[in-house]
Amino acid sequence: MASGFIFLLTERANFIIVNKVSAPFIDKEGETAESLRENPGFSYGLNWGLAGKGVIVKDKAFQNLKSSELLAKGATIAETLSGLPLHVRGTLGGNSTISKAQYSKLLKQVTTHISSVSNIFVHDGAIGLSPESDAKVRVISDSPSAILSLSSILWETPTRAVSHDSCPLTVYIATSISTAVEDIIGLGAQGNNGFIAADIERSSLILCGKAFADINGTKLALTALSEPVIFARGGLLLSARLLVSCDSVVLLFAPENAIQSYSDLLVSADAGVVLSPQGVAPLFQTKKLGGINPYRIPSAVVLATSDSSGNIPSISKLSPGQAAYHFLAGYQNGEFVPAYAKGSSSIGVLDLAKTLLSKLKQYQVPTFLVNVDGGVKNITGKDLVKLVTSEKVAPFRLKGGDLQRKYNAFLSYKFQDIPEEFSF
Image (cartoon, rainbow, N blue to C red; front, side):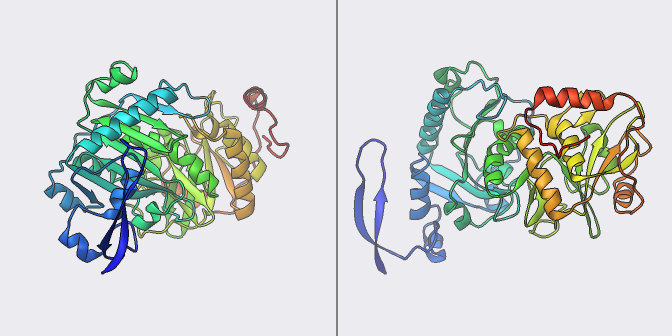
């Protein structure tokens, strides 16, 4: 037994008590396997890490339990919810309904609540699959059911990778917190099932009540939180999907109403992938991805547009500059959806387009514009992959009409200083 130090941190005093004790050497946040078997639910390293996040372990903290172990602790599969109130601070162009002061007050209420329960449950995971470009996540909950739900969408990652990460995301889940918290922080009534609140500046997400069961809302919040982290690490978070057939990997940008046609080859129905030097992978866990590594760099990129006028060809090949331009516009039958993303972003859309242009040139990925209201309507994913991997696709040329004027008018109004390399 080697001598060591245990540091006990308390928010009720402005000092740290240091007790010298005998303890086994700790090589990672968790204890040795032997000590964990002897003291399940207790880890010096984990308790210290939680204290740094404002949560003081009252009795026990269980980390990274398997599904069977969570069920043994009383976890149940919650009924899926949707449309719960979502508040996000720090997005560009977003209209946040929660202020910095309100979020700080809410975080204090939530950490105090979690610190008051006997058993705390912790899960470590990641958003994205590349260790160099992903966003590490630690979930801290008062309920095993919430951990069971969140662990199904996060990718696995070593606990040490999370505890040693420079900017991990922290998710606090308070399922049994009083509904009075809404009035205490001044948010007003949020409904009977709880709400979701995220602060990009803090890299922090709070799920109150049954909000953990709103998987889509939780994913939206996690996407917003992870975007600046992934971008800073050289990855590009895109509102796209993956089609995979044998050795062909196609990065697909498409409107929701066109996705079902390609379901035969879709890796995930969720929009959200990370493109990095290591490859491309869905943001969130999907059972269709074989193995634990990202796919290789895409063999093609498809920008699906919808133009019922017939002025845009059924399928055509784009230069990198044209691809960035059409990505930035996101034209869908009279409406523009920049970057194909409906939600707010913490990264400027023009910056995303510039970075995509750089990636397309760097990786020499061929890009195609597909008119889903043209001759390729209702084709399968397999058919689409065959089209874009053939060498018979002609360069893009508008058949007529004034679409180019509409594009230019919208983009010049919406964005300043569009690079000259961007072209229709």
